[in-house]
Length: 273
Image (cartoon, rainbow, N blue to C red; front, side, top):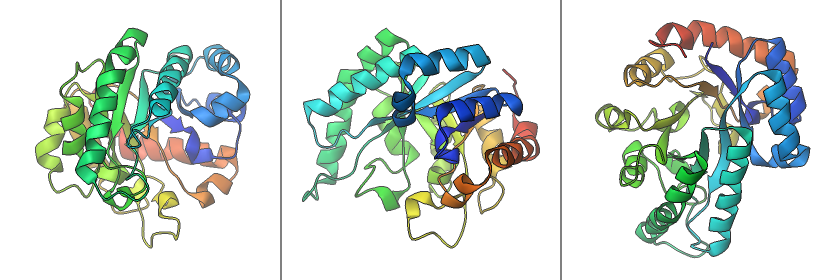
């Protein structure tokens, strides 16, 4: 099974609870977030996942480059060190939104490229891949000036594929009018494949409006077939930001994710790890 549970899906549980739950349900991988990992201790978490025999599929998150300050670069260097210590193959990058008072979208995107020019060789030296994530355009002003897969690829392609890749996230990309043209360009560049669903109505907090796979409007089997045909053989991370999901009993959520993975995702993966 290539299922990974992103930690934000069960927000509110500590890292040990998540890892032990995954072991109980036969889930082989987790996507970790920096804040709960820091709370538990990086060395302790690295030992926890190693002893449990599960993979770390990604570390979230780095990025937030659009302020153009040195502090952001230094924080991303720390994040790369953390990812390496955890054995995470990639560090997910959220670009950052417009700086306060700014309307200069091209300028903000240029700062993202400048940050990648600095960080790409540092990532390569640590054996960790930078994973540029495009977010749905409703988050462009405050979270990510990278909104389409094409924009993410334009940032990644100047660098070696082992240093900079992209995240293919169904929630953020299913709407993309150029998806059919741009997705083939991701061959060899997909650092992470994340799945969740687009459900209506959107919550007042749109950031936490994601639905569980199969509950919304995204054709996840077709999406998965397309990604698999491109040679992606990594884990499939379920990343659902939804307060109602996070409030459910942990074992209930994990069992549900295993079932949905087997029904919606696994039959459409052409290659197994």
